[in-house]
Length: 297
Image 1 (cartoon, rainbow, N blue to C red):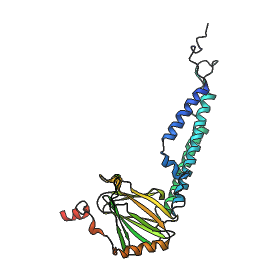
Image 2 (image 1 turned 30 degrees about the horizontal axis):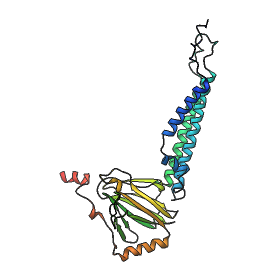
Image 3 (image 1 turned 30 degrees about the vertical axis):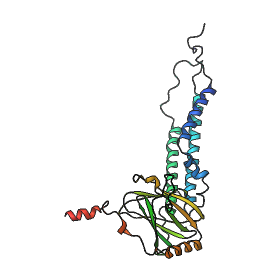
Image 4 (image 1 turned 180 degrees about the vertical axis):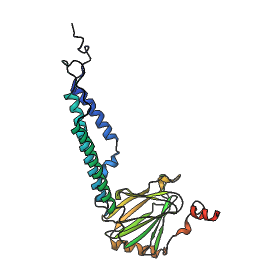
């Protein structure tokens, strides 16, 4: 006759099967947490490596964060699984296990280690921010970029020429003369990209450059960088800005300084001298709240 303390027949499950289920659940959770593009940024996205003077700093921060997170995760899961196996209830056990209110070494460990991790992440973020977002290197070329529903205007300020973009066509039909605007950048040159909006909130994003900035009406922002790797890249608006947001894309061509000068001359030959300024903004959409307040008083 079976002992009353023994499990009923058919209820025994091997520890290997249990660990397999736990491992599968953990792997599913981990892999579902990030898209393929997010994983590729640091480890597989070759276009970003060395693309600008900032991208390698972002990649180092991304990879370092993931390595630290995976190490902490592996240690945590290892300790959990070890406790499940080492302190499982055995057939010979009777009554309740020894009750412990605390363990001072463990208390110190899981207090000190998170503090160290948070401080390390904080200082690494500050260091990266100082050389990327807070980069204010004087520019050799200033380019003013206006976002508008649903295209882009590029003012090459230093050269006093412009390019007026039109909305890209993504409906699959052929429309001669309709193509995405192209932003030309000279390689190995200190650049300032001044970002403005003509109407609603947009967001300037070149995925391979690993940087994105909101473009808010009435507020200016800028990016200082060097484009190092010559080639063609895709840019887009990353802020839902209306019906044709998906067609608010643009191309980026990073070319040699000689090719850049030739492009600038081609704009002059087309009569595109001067700048497309604020006179093309939709002032009926945005009014400065401080001006409004002053008008009321």
